[in-house]
Length: 398
Image (cartoon, rainbow, N blue to C red; front, top):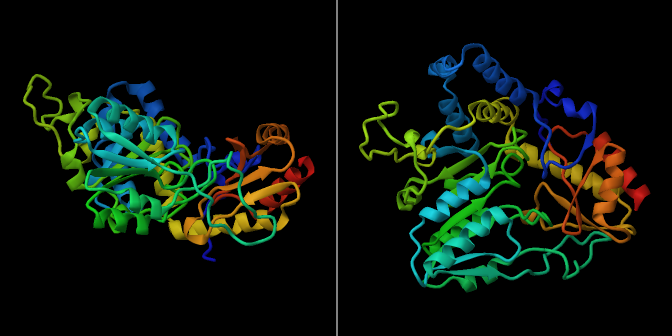
């Protein structure tokens, strides 16, 4: 396993809690906090002058696009600054050229950010939202891993997706990783299918960007949206949007403001002259301090490592969970390798996920509940010792 390049001082939360919930609101890494605080301090000192100071080599927007372009292996021109996944996907859904009778395919248990925007547009335009059924996932064969009850969200099937595509299908909207059971889409297979059927693929990457490889141009993905405060260790209220040039051209602008226009600060030049690169979705002022914080997290923590090495590290820690877990008390949901994610979901055989999580909170061990599951989600800064200690506490409660 390739060693990670990390500065332990970047993760001060480890001094306070045993955090195993990077699928939730994560501790802010030190570089993000310092970069955001530096901007706020300068605004405190000089007011509007801070905007002019953060130009040239310190240009926040340019640095953000460069860092995420490198992370996603794409041109910085395809990157947009957003405040969250829902904002990004709402702009995409609002502007997508849907007509009556068109079809959108998604999953019956999708996260709301990638569900409600399509529900709304299907209702408004007479399109149909086709939802893939929940199926029993193909699981690992190790002891304690059994069939998952129907009351739990599980996974969807690529075979069913292929069968549901018709000449009226325009778009597939799915999460890379399902937020409950941790099922990860095989993006290469999914992208190949959508490309072969001339269907646009929109991916919610809130539960994968920063912990799983995600290269939209290589995989044939038209659009990727993600929040910055989970696996990316950035500030709440930040996010990123990727769009391919061909897909971006299809999207009508539905939210607009001064920042859209090429004439920039010539505000009384009212020509309709919007940018057509990633700035097409940056309609007004963003929280620059927070955005620069997220950019710092990518620059200082993620780019010095490979995402493949981070994924391998996280899966090694999950294997430690499985090695030490009392499966008489917890049933793990262990997906096949191509569907493995940063989330290892556990079903308590006694008690409830919420009650067990609350007991762990009292011990400063953070493992979050969601829809009946306990979600174990260690990350690149988590140690083996922390995982073993968390599992031991979990076993005692169970």
